[in-house]
Length: 309
Ligand SMILES: [Zn+2]
Image (cartoon, rainbow, N blue to C red; front, side, top):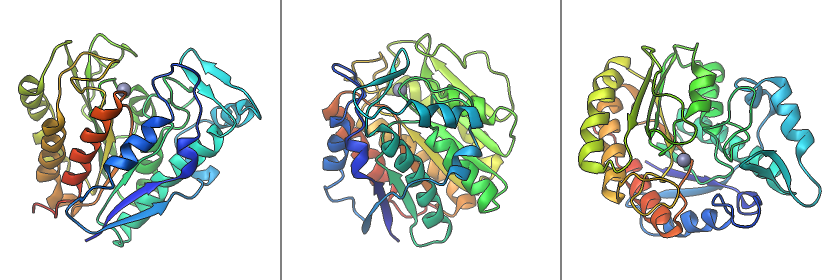
């Protein structure tokens, strides 16, 4: 059993401008934390660049054209109030999404059991036709669509525990009931969506500011676990954002590292029998560098555990 860690040097070069929380140092903070013993054999690979076809499964042609044409040769381009591209950003985005595709290929062909992609820019706010909230291409959506359309899987689940609603992922899969999407998030908070969603395959859990692990755990367990088990997903994806951490500066939930171990293990416990332990996890948010590193380590360590069923 090999745990695959996917990344690319360009992910450390994607520039967002002075004072921006989604900054270059996040990449190294996670990479450094994952140098510690993860308890299982680890293979580290450089993410290939994505094929345009894989992005076009989840994004409109106009969206892809906008990202490619906005990429600056020097300086910064501003695509929305929070979303910037520098000279290395397009390369980073191509390798972030390409890492997602590669991780799926390796987990489906059995040469890796689980995979974590330490990539940026993050993805879960990017909608089918809109860059948004630091996100250019929706990496986890690219991964899930590749598993479904290229590898022929019929049902997958995406669990998004970032502190912000995964509006982009919801937008992309709103009418695709091959995907069970589970998102917990502080509400109200950017992007202020998701609290009213009614769909049998989208399970949102809005939470008030101040929610800690003792309250978050039963809330997501009740909303998600029976549905996840009944869904019988053939593969599991995480949108792994760590900005619900107590020490995170962008939001006001109060999770700690042990909560990330818990959600990773518990979601696997209810899905491993169906997925065979096939999991791909994509880094999303997390803006306190120290808490980000510790939390990513807790999540990835639990990711590499052998299947529970
Ligand atoms: Zn976030």
